[in-house]
Length: 331
Ligand code: NAD
Ligand code: LMR
Image (cartoon, rainbow, N blue to C red; front, side, top):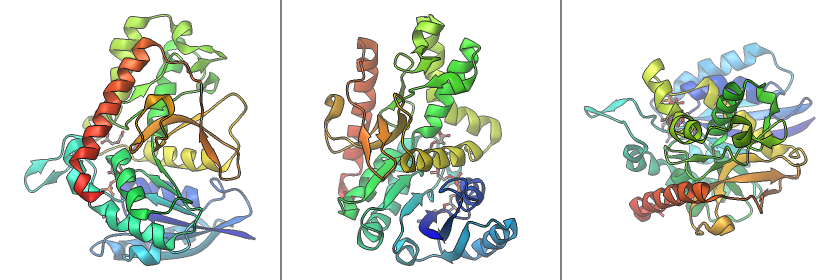
């Protein structure tokens, strides 16, 4: 049986609880592929992972391989084919008497985690390892990790699939269509309130979603803020940040990278900018992507951007440049 090594940080957290069974069930990497899972946690929490491992065994999936719990990042990522960097502090919680409200608050707290992890991945994970950063602020954490990894064969992604799923769902609801009819969604830029979910290039049954909806006021004043602020709305309503939908988006991203993108469509994730669409190199930027199903992912070229899109993309680019400046001592 083919085997794949997958490492997950934050293995005892709430996203991981939804994520882990789906990684080893055959759903993500396919039936007939054994998934060896390494769960990585901070030392204070690592013992709890024994309970998680018991549950994964008790699921009885044919595809579940070796299960390991560790507080040692080097042990966890050694020979990894995929690393899912989920472990980090979510906003909405109180640290030293201060409620962590915005992603910028998380920059300093979480950024430091990704230096050691990046180094370990660069040194010990497979040379074609794929890394998905979920922990916020995801784009800049990915930049820190990728910079420290210094391994050009490996490919780093920051997750925007949750935003893309949210953006598709709201278009479907507004248009009274089934979500399966919504394709070609791209989240340009940062996984933050400056993101630009693109309704002009998204399609509903093959037609521009913006044309189908035909309501610019709704797009600008309701749709964009709703998608951009959805994470906060969930935190406010649930008292905890999105977990099931975040785990689902992580699975979607892995599947999108692992399988050939359907003809004419694309998927959304943030990758290192190569200058495409005039975005400066040196930041991790949300783009439309395609995979050939053999591990090669490319940025889709030639997507048309109207003036409205360009102005939104400028804002999110600026924010990413500022985030980079704020963590420059970690790079
Ligand atoms: P959580 O607090 O439930 O779990 C996080 C876990 O990470 C904890 O168990 C913690 O002990 C662990 N951890 C912290 N530092 C670690 C380290 N250095 N190594 C290994 N593990 C470590 O949080 P959660 O709800 O699972 O969310 C995790 C992260 O994902 C947060 O940063 C959250 O903001 C982010 N998130 C991102 C998206 C997205 O779309 N990109 C969506 C939802 C949540
Ligand atoms: C989300 O988008 O749900 C997460 O990034 C959590 C958050 O802080 O918004």
